[in-house]
Image (cartoon, rainbow, N blue to C red; front, side):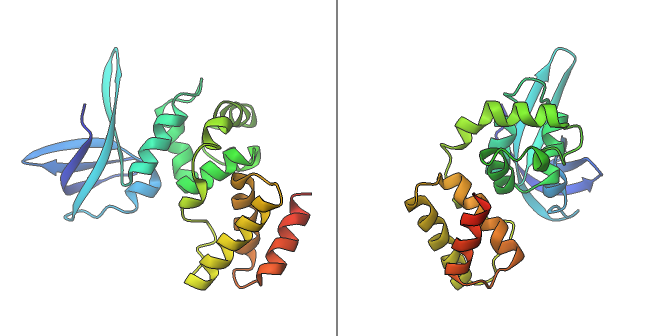
Length: 199
């Protein structure tokens, strides 16, 4: 099995790219998030997953290991093939997908191409337990908090909610949502709005 490819990007298409390694060009399919980070002529390391079928051997590539890990997790869900996985990975960042699953946000998961509410519900149902075992707040948040101080406020708000009895995954998701609307909010205001949002 090919774990990763290290070489020079020679082509980038709408849904795939080619990386040249020692004179051999490897074509792989990837999410929009991965493809947007590739530049023709530049060196890159692509983490890969080879999907073997009776009639094909298809290589999927990822700029980050955590994206590959989520791809593998999503493909364990019945009805979720590699193409649907790439649609999900193209619609949201890795951390946001984990948080959406943990918070059972069907609407957010349904934003991906090829994913309707029924499939989104199945993804959440089958993966929520596994996602709750992952340290979700280790992933960057959608709010793109610009300063170290804001990052500290984020962590403090999450910790406060966890101490109040809420699950960490739910706390991370709600605090992220609050701070994306107002990244400079005071800690007390964030907690107050988050508590209101969590009912």
